[in-house]
Length: 296
Image 1: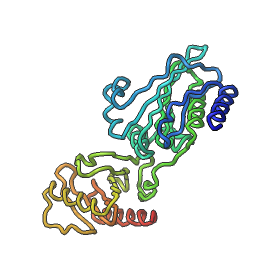
Image 2: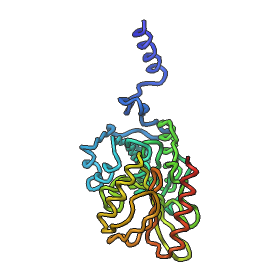
Image 3: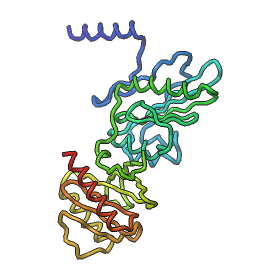
Image 4: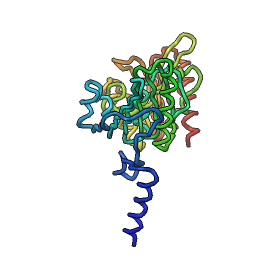
């Protein structure tokens, strides 16, 4: 009986909606996705699929960066119209929404024209990129003339609707102090923060205040012990011995990044570098701590 109902249900979908090819349905965490139909446009050629092992075939030279952000799969579709214009849609699926934001943040232009599509999106001539949940979507247009912006937005909205989730930017970004922060400068570094393998993923943001430019960062760990281990290894690597490894403030002379002030409390390590003024460093460490406390 259940098998008959399943067949009937599939037949109903087939007759009413036509054949739908779900691209991602093997994992229950991923919703089935099919490239949308767009009025006046037709898909040209077959949908291309790339995995971590084959991604270099599509973006040779850039695949390694995507792989550091737990890239899972890429689907690519091309569309064309009667005016010989074309649009290419690339949908990158990453392991988590944070990893998707991470690769998006690496390619995002901070001074771009931002739109309200997905968790965040931006548009430039012949390019519209957006992030939504674990998906990073890149849309490129060719020979679209004066209608380029309208065409890109139409495609982006269709893809966003098909993905079925708007998502949101990582909540920890709200902990960064607002004063002096450069808009849309936030990034997620997935591995080897500051070039050290023992400092795993970190969120960063750029700041400018009274002619001084500096950077803030935060590392979120699953366990308190991980933070202690990271700080201990950092002190050893930078030859800053003699500091008590307990929650609190650390001043580190990093041979590659200069003087760094960082704090450890609970599962968070947050810090500031490229700022020489002691009062400024203290102020922003305090503001950052207040922002992190609001998350609890």
